[in-house]
Amino acid sequence: MPRFAATQIHTFTALRPGVLRSVLFFFSGLLLAPALPGAELHLNNGDRITGHVIMRVDGKIHFRSDVLGDLVVNETDAAIVDTPEVPVEPLSGLPPTQPKPKAKKPAAGTVAANESGLIQPAPPPPPKWKGKVEFGFHNQSGRSEINNTSLRAEAELKSGRDSYRATGRYLYGENNGNLASDRNDASFRWRRETSERVFGQSLTSYARDQITQINLNLEQNGSLGYQLVQNDQHKVNVGAGLTAQYRDAEGLEPGFNYFGEVFQDYTYKINGRLTVSQALNALYSPNGRARLATSTINTNTLADDVDNYKVRFNSTLQGKMSERISLNLRYEYEYDNAVLNKEARSDQRVTSSVGYAF
Image 1: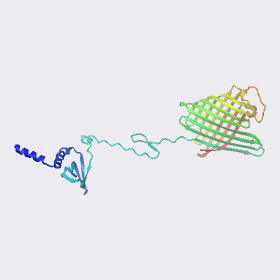
Image 2: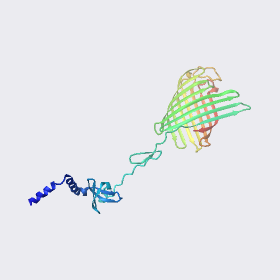
Image 3: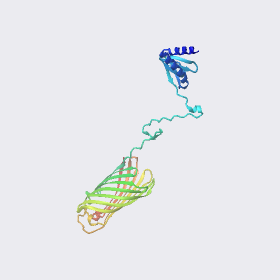
Image 4: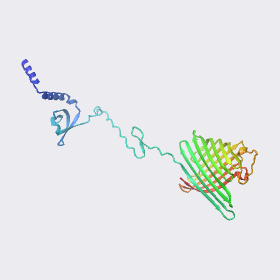
């Protein structure tokens, strides 16, 4: 018995190193084969065999098939393709885990909102200015020769809590060859809502009037306002504040004056085509001597103290003929007690014009 064992040991150690390595790989493959993941053996002739890879050595693939048993194939004649493992859920009776849906590619004008793949619309474009230009002309001949021309422009912008409004106006008229009106003015208003109904307002205005010989009139107003009514048809705002005025006029030393001011504006949308709008401003200053101005009608000066106040009122009825074209009927009234001549203190007019919206 001992002699046989020695012979066996001698025979085993006498194996060549390459053969010994193959034997070791073979037995280790037998031990590890059940643990290796499933795979497919793709032969060059197109056949596919499912099973497990035992080992790959010396250019050969040792493959075990449940149907065909153990196979040895040259690596040049076949390829190994791993197959996914069976998930645990089906084996345990649980429903399989659903893969996460891939995020869809955003379409034009949209952006991905978050990591979940939801798509939300792109942010709206920034707000744009909206406005219109109006032109009015009146000519009368015969007993009287009257020519009146008016040109107006206005634009508005709403951005969040802020709203902006810019206006410009030019008025010119002749009556029997005499100058009846020659005036241009402009204003810029900024309103900011501080709460649901309260807002702050800044109004900057410029005016020049040849009839009252006011070469330059600049006013800067700061006010607080309150929205009395705010719905789809009616909008009513009231407020009060302070106004600083710089005036340069004939017969008056240029300088500053200060006023207390109250204002009110109202908009009524009768229907989709008809709109009525109205605005009122009243200013008062206790300083009377600093504001006297002459006019082309009467150039005498007056040094007595008098009340210094000014009132502006205007209303408009707008009728839309189309989305762009409108007809406008306006009534405007302005009274400035700083003008020396009583006949030149008030200016009122009724005008009709054609408007083009942009």
